[in-house]
Image (cartoon, rainbow, N blue to C red):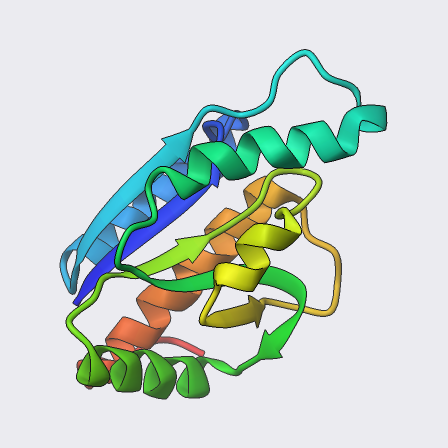
Length: 155
């Protein structure tokens, strides 16, 4: 299984970055992964939302080729950990394509990226910061990989 995690800009919060790195190390014991941090839109205010989303989408799109694209989206499909494990197992069984998890910046993802997704996934109905969302995604992917490998994972 080849996993790709794509998002605009680096994780700036050092504490969150530490958790992110911890889960990436754990995932690396179970699967091949790649992290792509594209250039984020800088120097623009939230009043330029359309421009920010466009700039971030351009950067992310450059790195999406033949991937099975899963966009994180607040109105996407919700799954528990076991369902996510079954879903990932099914996707990898049907195709040798890498699975690309795409996480937006503070404004989310441009509509055109959401339309390209084979799956739109919601981690929660609650609003999470984009940096915290990255960690929650990585933890859930690690949990799912552990379930798929038959390993125990604390509940």
